[in-house]
Length: 247
Image (tube, rainbow, N blue to C red):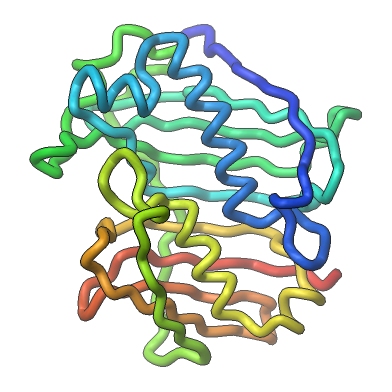
């Protein structure tokens, strides 16, 4: 087994990263974690900007599993860490941790990424294009994430508008926006009285400027869970399951 390299940054939660409860927005939390991985990739000239400019390639996350012990809040100082854990021909797996300054783990996450040819919109082999894999182990298998089963009906639906500010350097909607759209479908009183405990999300099909997405949600109050999915017409773009706990 290789010696895995851990990269970390320290940051503080600004007011524009939080929602009305004072907790960090889920999309902002993901952005902070991705910033940490981007900085590590930059050391190998393989971050998003360099991959696009030099190779016409882009990193795309396809799945997350996240466990949340405590959502970071306004003004809180954090240590955010990431580690590339393993890879195969097409998938690159990466872990994240968010700790408070006393070393308590607030959030942990597992993720799977792929590299795409931006012009052809096809997945390419990451193993052939990365010289520095940060100590990640080469594996033959595909790592399995929790399966998300969509319900037959929904409690909430909401049309979403895509503007130029939603589009990233990969020429599709940045994945962080999906989190905002999903949470926005829920009732405000529910958000005020609950905090995320865990989540699973799987990205199926990218959205672009011409897409007309609709976000759907089904709430299971008995088990404190909600199922979310976004569709563009009949095409499923993303699905997720959120587990909540009472505040």
